Amino acid sequence: MPLNPKSLENLKPPKKGEVRNPNGRPKGAQSIKTVLRKWLEAEQEIQHPFTKEKVSLTQLDIITLEQLKKARKGDTHAYKTLLDRLFGKPKQTIDIDHTTDGEPITQDDRPRVDLSKLSTKELKELLKLQKKMRG
Image 1 (cartoon, rainbow, N blue to C red):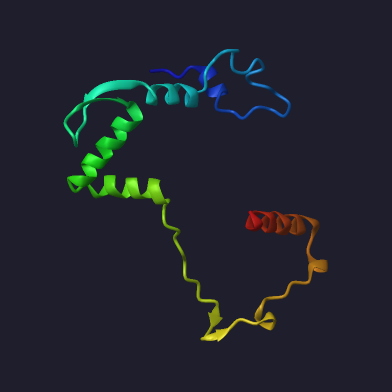
Image 2 (cartoon, rainbow, N blue to C red):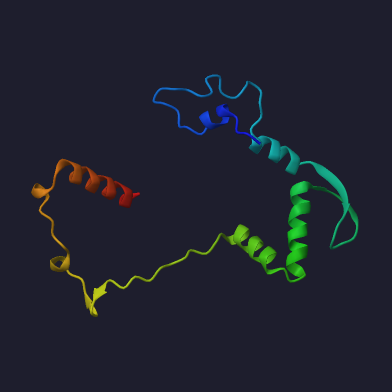
């Protein structure tokens, strides 16, 4: 299938000051978050998987019950998902050895750079790296 030349234009980033969608989203259009929330709040009559009685539950409740059902049957991924959702994902830590040959690093061990000998280009790169490291 041949490529449409206009589709390749969409892959290029906009030029400075160029607006690709000047009118934005049309008035009254719902965001995906609003639409999803509406469908998750929709109720449905089902047989409760644990009590076996007929109940009216939201789609969110039904999905949650299905995850619980899977977890109870031994699905470790479903169990982990429920725990992560309830308590948050555990933080991962990284152990960094900040010593040289078993001795702690001191101020004197750090490499020194004479900034006066760097070119303007090198100084700009150094500033970019510093900003990137600070996040």
